[in-house]
Image (cartoon, rainbow, N blue to C red; front, top):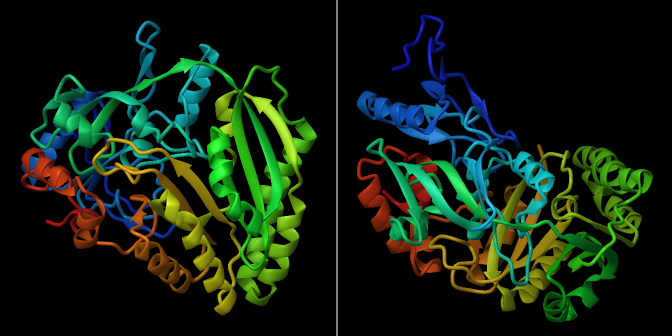
Length: 449
């Protein structure tokens, strides 16, 4: 068993330190755990869970802190999975990869590509750990292919009793049905097995389009493309659309200069300057939005999946995202646009719209229904409550489900009505964690106590 020195560092096994303040990526959540631990194996992690329980301390795991909610905050033991990284095995017959829970998606994507393999779908960034991304329901956009968690074929979980549980459709299937998006409430994920496929090429077609055209053709654009998404720039009638479809090739990635201009200069460098100016002088935001929405031009390129699906995101922000029945998305978006136009709000970030097919995960935002996502953002440090409250009012009127890792004010009473399998999840939580070892304020709000 690891022992702790007076300085707070473990002498053997994984590292352990006295608690210091933890802050998420956006800087809107902080917590001060009693201690932090970095176990180097699932067995060491189980030992730390048992020790925390014996000490009467709650336990939370934190990845890269890309959630905007306090889902990972704790005043007890904070588990950092930085030593639980790497691929355990690739099974080319079953077409699966088993990966340690603390592995960043970027490392997984690069390693798979090196082996001629790929995930089927992914979100638009890849900084998160695999466990953090799946536990909060991270998703991209897709007509037929769903969230990252929907690609899980097996997972390994340390329970509140300190036991290692393997879950799949065949082994502990009732846990598997819920724990793929477990919110950290059912245990600590230590390894995940994903379905994979031979690496393929995607052709991305980015094109400006008017708001009226996108919304009137939304169903057709969704039906005709494997992956469709668009961004509407508030205070304008301008959108930027992106269609990703499989391609026979050849690969034709963006040119080094043109790619840098689009992805770094316009989407990060100049956008950072524009956001800073807008925060300091809000009345200029509509003018900046008009310029920004015209700066991005049409382009087409072909590359391997993670280079098409994901983009660098260096401008820090706060985000709220709601999942709606897909048929409600256009109406809700039009209401959102009308609300912004009649209000004094000044919104510097575009509104993002994506889709997902229905899946069978208990607390997936796409559980049991075809889904569209509407995400709103504000630059870090900008007062957000007025905008987010107005957006949330629209989304909940359409039966919206909030993204578990993004800002929202919903509670267990609302969510029990939004998720048909909510009671199934909470009953499983009662069985696996009756003493609420993995609880925190956020989980008490969204799941009840």
